[in-house]
Length: 125
Image (cartoon, rainbow, N blue to C red; front, side):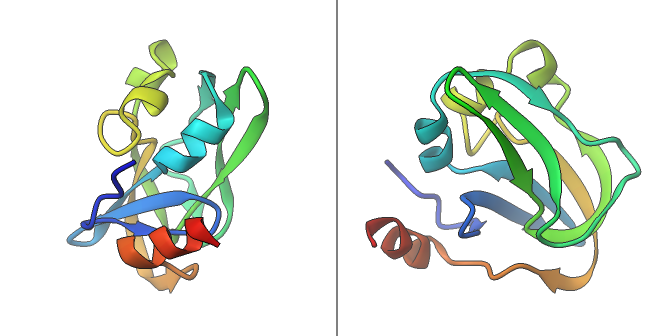
């Protein structure tokens, strides 16, 4: 499993990619693998303000229903509507087409974020 170096990761297995004052969120390859086949993604509402660490989406798989937590604080400005028809994109392209939401960051508030190397070590513990 390749863990992209250009992302930051949380202990709850979410990833974040920062682009200027915006952040794109998704769940890690490890998380989607643990969940199994994803059958539904409940997306957040555009305009919703998120606190770092707050549950903002729900991923439902054949095994479980799991909350997805915001790595950083901000306002939801875009959601991945493709997931409404193809939730399995989270399985097949966790770090690409399977992204969940895009947020305009509201400051430096974030949960503890790990680099790719730190996340790799975290997974090995």
